[in-house]
Structures are given as structure tokens and as C-alpha cells.
Length: 77
Length: 229
Image 1 (cartoon, helix red, strand yellow):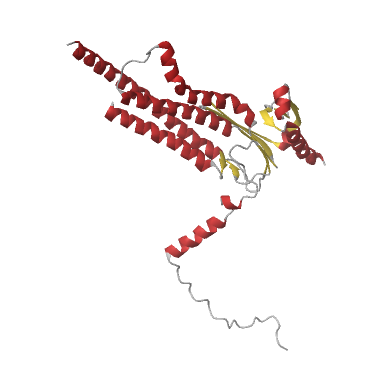
Image 2 (cartoon, chains in turn brown, purple):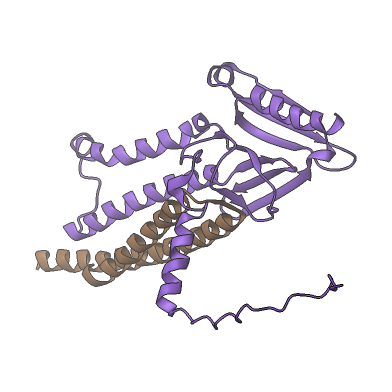
């Protein structure tokens, strides 16, 4: 009985943590979207042909990781 | 007497109508010309490297309002040493979780009992935040640029991702240029603030923590001097 209540407590806490995590991750993904937009805007103002693609791909990589982390959290947590 | 002004009869045959080239051939040709164009990174003689903060006569840099015949003479960013603070903080944050097992022995089990998958997700998220912190700081430095062309001075300020300001003035409006290099660190790493004073009620330009300020001042002075020659 004691074990069962402990499991229930953990699962309840787990769902709270999951919702909290997903909200933070959505906010973070939106922030990264703003970062990508700003990188593109700044590239139109000053364009460095050598490294601009590297900078853009860095922003995209972070965005993709954030999105995949959100989806992973949604599925496995 | 023959009339010398009579034009000779044109015996040349009219040019045969040119056959239209197939689209794929044209595309291939345009691709070739693009590759051989100046934009191709392989032929840049003096490219601006990723962590470069001072470059005279840079190749591969363009800006929004650039004229066709306008040439960039000097490219400046804040000296790279000014990034030491956030780089060290980022490295510290990156190695911080490695000490977590040791603190658990000392302070007891502070973490709530959750399944392992939660901790894996938090671990990955933590490093994503650290990487984003480093990236945002880097692009803030990367896009804070000062350009001196043969026609004008351009100062691009970019900070906190939401603030950007592009200020431009013609070289003919520049009246004086000076620099200030205060402190041991600035003297040791040779960087300082450059002040470009403009005529009348126009705002002055300040390039903060610019590398080799003496050289920059010398270049700008030469450009202003040429005007009065």
C-alpha cells in the first residue's frame, strides 16, 4: 500500500514536471526562432560571404535540437 | 568622276537566326559564370575569418546600402579578448554538471526521485541552453561591426537580439578622429575606443574596444587628409 502511494506520488510529480518542461521548451523554441530571424536580418545588413552560412546553420541546428527535444519530451516523459 | 560618298553595296549575308540554346545548357553556363564570379569564396585573397576583429581591405564583405564603386577599406569588430567573460562563463556552465555526483555525496540526495529518462532530457536541455547562451553572445559580437569605406563610415550596433542600429556618415563630414586606450588590459591587448567626430549637429561615432586603435586612427586621418589635398 505504501509502495503504491509512493508510485502515485512520483507519477503525479512526473506529469507536473513534464508539463513544466514542455512549456519552457516551447518558449525556448520561440526564442530560437527569433534568433534565426535576427540572424537573417543582420545578414542582409552586413553580409560576410565566407561565414554567413556557418552562422545560419548554427542557429538552425539549435532550433532543430530544441524542436526534437520538445517532441522527445512529449513522447517519452 | 566617281562619287566617293556612295556607299559600297553590302555583300554580306544577313546573319543567320541564332538557334536558341537549350535551357539546361544556359543554366550550366550561368552556373559556371557564378562560380567564377568574385563572390566565390575560393578566390578571396583577403577574407575575414570567423574570429577576426580587424581587417584592412577585406574581401567578401558587403553591406546593405553599398554603392557599386564603394570599396571597404577597413573592417572592425570589438577585440576578441572582450569575449573572454562569456566564454569563460559558458565553459564553467558546461563543466558544472560533472561535479554533481561529488556534491551528492556531500549534501545528500537533493534531487527529487524521478525516472532516469527525465534526467536525460534535463541534461540535454541544459547543454542546449548553454550552447544557445554561447551562440547568442557570439552573434552579438559578430554583428557588431564598424566599416570604413572610401566614401563613408558605417557603424552597425547589434545587441540583446532586439536592438539594432545602423549609423552612417560621409567621410567629408568627419572632422576629427581620436582614440582612448585606458587600462593595463587594453594596453596589453592593444585595443581601445575610437571617437569619430562629425560636423555640426550630427552624432559622433564611437567604436568601442576596437583593435589596433592607433592604426585605425591613422587610416581615417589619411582618408580625411586626402580630401583637403
